[in-house]
Each structure stands twice: as structure tokens, then as C-alpha cells.
Length: 294
Image (cartoon, rainbow, N blue to C red):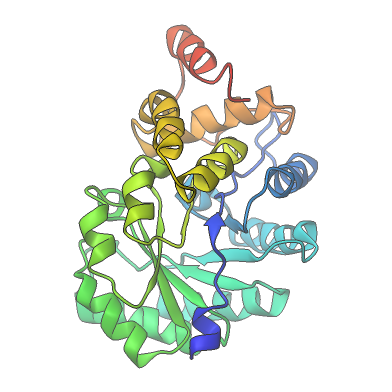
């Protein structure tokens, strides 16, 4: 059990964005460039099919294709975490097995939330997916996006009963107290790293931000683990753009695509509809916030 728990990566683990061309079709070349850029920027691993990946706007075949491309593009240089998102337990189990067979290093499970399943139903779903594979599992907790609150004790019980449930990604505010309520589990902070200094102080194993700012987050992560207050000052310099981008998930995705185009990683900033749109003032704001970061 311990070897599985320790198999999860540390550090900055960007959630990859889905690359579309100007017609809304998958753009594999841009997507592979993104994987390479994240690795070159120092990512400890890469993750796919998070909320920032627009997983909910992908067909089953597209999701399967991108899972394979992610593993192949990483080429074993860093671990690959693939999120299992189907709400039906049977489909989630099938997807988990496919992802493990493709070579995923770990899975991240989005617990079902549509139509308000009971906590017992959620536990059963997560347990079934974890039992279907032998690789480590992280469970995502995103109550603001899913509308479903889960008590920390639920995750602790799941980890005690299933040895490969090794960590929790925490996408909630306030972040710190929830992290502290998960002793013995590896914790990862999401929510675009807005509360990263506190998360580091509370022992978080890593942060899962968006991909375009990987280099800045890697630098900040390193400084937060060094002595002195430079890490907090570096994080403070990121806060204006993080606060701007994190107005809501769709707005963050639109900003992310624009930044990936600016970096020459994506050819197009296309988001599948319905999506958020930056007006001219917002676009200038984003460019000014990130002028010295990209």
C-alpha cells in the first residue's frame, strides 16, 4: 500500500487544455506541443481531463484518443495522470481500465454529482473505480463546480479501505483547513493555485494549475520550499493574473487558450460553445498581467 501511495508525483502538475483548430476539431499537433512545453517548463507530471481540459465537451472517442496521445507525448519523461469522469459506475470502471492499459501512471476520479447522489453512492463509485486498477488514484474534490460537498472523513475512509486511493485534489475555498483534515493522504491544491503558500505550509504534495503558467508555478513552488520569504513574494506577483483568470471556470479556460496561443503552443484559442469570451478590455488586461510572465 505504501509503495502505491508514494507512487504519486510531487510538484507542479498542470491540467492540460484541449487544443482545437479554428473549426473546433481536435488539434493534435498543438496538444503535443503543450505536453512538451509543460515538461520543458519543469512540470513534475501532466494531467488530462480536468475541468480546465473541457472534458465535458469531448466525445467518448475524442477522450480515448487524447488519453493515448497524452501518454505517448509524455514518452515516460514525467508521470501522466488521467481523470476518470463518467457518472455511471460501469462506464467509469471501463474507462479506468482503458486508461491504465494505455500506460497512465495514476488516475484522478471526479466523483459523480449530477442529480445529487448520496455520499454512500459516491463512495461506492470511487471504490469501484479504484478496485478496477492497481495504479494510484487521486480523488478530486470540487464543491464549487459540482455543487456537492463531501466530508474529509469520507476520503479518509476510502483510503483506509482501498490501498491505491492515495490522494485528494482540493478545489475549494478555504483550501487550507480542508487540506489539514486529510492526514495521511497526499494532497494537491487546485483552484489555480490561489492559495498555494498556505497549501505548502500545510504539507501539500503539489499544485495542479493550468498549463500556460507552468514555468511561473514551478519557480514559485521551488521558492516556497526554500528558506526565506521570496516564495510568498513570487506568489504575490502572480495573484493579479490568477485572480483575473479565476472569475469562473469557462473564463479561465478562455484566458488559458489565449495565453497558449501567445506562447506559440496552440495555433488557435478555440473553445467549444457555450464558452466565455474576453472582450477587448479583458484581453488587454490579461496581456498586461502576463507581459513579464510568458
